[in-house]
Length: 447
Length: 119
Figure 1: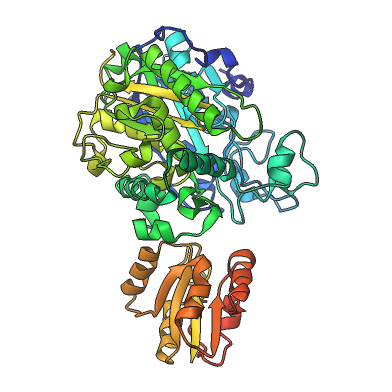
Figure 2 (figure 1 turned 90 degrees about the horizontal axis):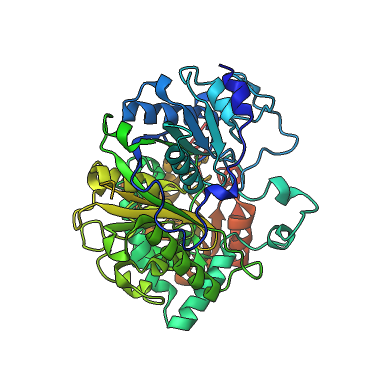
């Protein structure tokens, strides 16, 4: 089998794969696809130049971890869905010598930075000779949330029966967002306004949050319990950066004393770029029942593709779209907000987490009520867990902690992070943005 | 009296990334009778924990943008901030009325002893 050649044909999944419309009814594969295995690489703040710690190297570790965790024979794996981008802001500097030692430590593709600052399916398969049966590869662009939708749909459609799902992130020395296109003299399209004369990345969210506070009479200080809870949960996530390297809490005092990045977004409302990779193994419900881990069934995947009228969505647009997304999530899964055991919506930036959960109507909260909700017991031990994964705030930038957590919670192997105030039966995770995200409903039963 | 503020990440050996200044260097500066503390982007509670872990009784531990408050709180003849970033250490330090030192400059100051620098 021409593994490399076949993988080289990998393309982004077409828009039709994503369930982005309203009124689609129950997902046709509801409860027929399951996650069974999880693999995580160790984390690091930045790449240290060693081949094994390159983004390619850590991805191999994550994939092999997921295979081992699920108990499948590598030869039985017939699909690979992944995101080929591994950064949003750490690009190899122009003119800097290429790291040939690391590049040549692995089977290469035509692109020498494949495996270093990006990742193709071809590279992965060239370096995993044990995957002899892969006949389906596809890219879910952007983040794990997207790759999950693509993989779930592919398994449901019968295009692959045992599918690895991969997302990896690299980080290099130097400042984030200062390289790549941002280092050039010109940028095409609206990115010129965002980036070339740019504001910090969190600026748009900060503007929305400022309007939120004005509209509902809330304050930035009211975010402190959410941040404290997120970091506490993250410190219970052994796979996370902060738990592994810097077990630091963020107390309300710490949070309120942090410097502004784009007021009212402060330093701890932002996440920190890291090196990390995660992989899951998806299979059919029937096959999942024969494997090592308890199956976690996917009841639905849903996506938001709403385009704002201008560069930054207004608060009205955000609220309208998160409500629309929730309707899509619930309709396809055949559930209501009352069925959610907990929520794991995205948090990087922290200041938009409340948009996600207000749209969901989690625990009955309405628009403008999430910050009051944060003042109640939102811990993993209470009846209303918020972001039990700790998210990016608690674990570092990956955009996938919430998915791993949903699977682990429902499998009841979330260690000291296991929710105890609720039975972990149905959960939702996804992101990244309130406008423009992909979401998954997970369940302990097929429905 | 001299006041010395230390950045942590990229400046001290305990930083992420590690810097060239050892905790012994800080201990020695403190031992000289100077006012010593940290001004970092790390959570204040984490800064305090770091100093406590190394048994160094600092005079202050604040967030990065609070150098002005440090200056207002302590009466000293000279205020130094030692850091590794132009934008996040040097500029705000000078704006707050501090003299700025890169880590390699700090070890050459008369109020330090040589030999405490991490190889």
